[in-house]
Each structure stands twice: as C-alpha cells, then as structure tokens.
Length: 323
Image 1 (cartoon, rainbow, N blue to C red):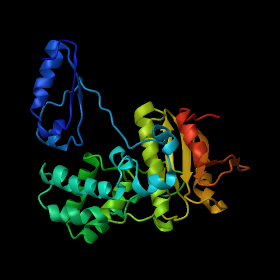
Image 2 (spheres, rainbow, N blue to C red):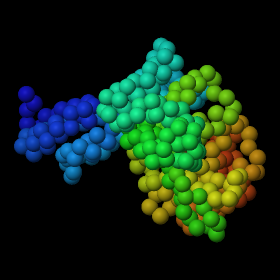
Image 3 (cartoon, one colour):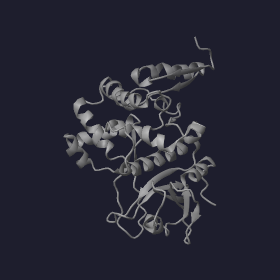
Image 4 (cartoon, rainbow, N blue to C red):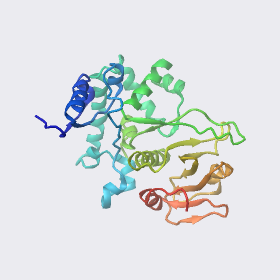
C-alpha cells in the first residue's frame, strides 16, 4: 500500500480508463503523486472519463535527442533508422522497427478499436508516409488509400492522437501575398514513415530532404516541450510560389525566428528566397539556413548560415532569439 505523499507510476493508462477515478481519489485523500503514461488519450476522451482537469500536467516524451545519444550520435543512422530508444538500442534495427509498426496496428489500432476498417487503415499508413514533411492533401491521401475523404481525415487524427505524427500549421503573416493555409504533416520519428512504406534501405537523395526536415521539426518540438525555448512554431509559404518557403517560423512572445533547412552540403541563392521574403515581418529577430556543410557564414543581408552541428549547439544553449 502506498503511503500518504508517495509516488505511483502507471503505464498504458488508456487501457483502463475508469482507473482515473481512483487516481483522483488518492490525489485528493492521500496526496499521492502519479505519473500516468500512455500512447493515446483518444479512448479516454471518447469515453467521457475523469481527465483530472486541474490536477494533472501534460508532458510529452520524444525520440532521443543528439545530446542524449552522446558520442554514438550519427545523423546518417538517425535519418535511416530514427531515434526511438527501442530501435536505436536494438541489435537488429530493421526487425525492431518493422515490428514496431506492425504492433502499432495490432495493439494500438485493432485492440483499442480505434477504426472499424483495419485493412483500410493499413492501406492508409504507407500513403500518409509519402506526405512526411509535405502539405496535407486529404483528397489525394483518400484517393490513393481507397477510402472516403472523411475516413482519411479521421485516420490523420488517429496518427496525431496516438503520437505517431503531428501537424505543423501554416503561418498567416499577410506579407503582401496570398499564403498557404493547409498544415504540413510530420511523422514523429524518421524511422516510422520509412517502416510504414517498408523501405528501410539507405535513404535515397530524394527521400533525405524530407527526412532531414522532419528530423529538425521533431528536434524543435522536443526542445519546445522539454525546455520551453519558444511558444509555437509554423511554416510559411506563398500559395502560388513553389521556390519560396520558410520551413519553420518560431514564435516566442511577440518575437519570431525563421529557419530554412537544406539537406545538402552546398546551397545556392535560391535557397534563401523564403528567408528574404520574410525580412519585413515585424519582430523577426534572426534568420537561419541550416545545412550539412561545415562552414558557418553570414550573408550581406544578415542571414546566418549554420552547419547542423552549430544549430544543435544553438538549441542546447536555449535557442536565443537575439545574438
């Protein structure tokens, strides 16, 4: 029996929703502190159970950060296999990652009865994986997966609710152009969309760009959740311009910081188009181009070009918006 003021850890709490009533009672009567872990709050919300409003703080756990991996960190290996601890530490990463996605279908989706049509959801997963790092086209996903549009929308919600993916909203800055409004889809870890597509060989050059951008998105999200280095983040792009985009726009209070990501060791002036198009955004403090080269530099108009290791150091330092 746990004494008053003690601590209790409960994993997979979504599997027994009514347990939250007892958790509530022990918090109130015995001042016991609980750590409630789970991979989805969807079943809890739909069941109308006690969600401990005002008595619980929500926290997220993310794939391993480079500073957590230490000397064994490898960007190539991370983009290939991802950073899930169970996969990263496995003797057979391919088998473990494949099994992880298969168990997701069986344990999370089927056993929790989150969908009525499991074969349809299984067809949907590799299609959604193709949209990793891209603007969501629900109609296109539905067509390619052979499901109704509303079904595809509900499947996307399930990916987010089960922490497999997240959506990055578009920034509406009204910078004298018509801007995109649909969010981008990012899977929570580089290995997951690759396993969903059953393509676990070395990443192709075409694939590497979206994997690198998605990995940076995951890093930003983790540092926001763990250390509060900014409040919200977005992407920005004019609706009709294909070569003008900013991958990430971070907001802290009323200040902004813009980041463009390139997966090559070299860049050209067109890579800076989006950052230059945002220069008139009020309170824009800094503009970064993050790439895989090894030389840090700055353009004449103030854009900072950072190798990825410099960018990681900037994150670890608390991501200062001012120089």
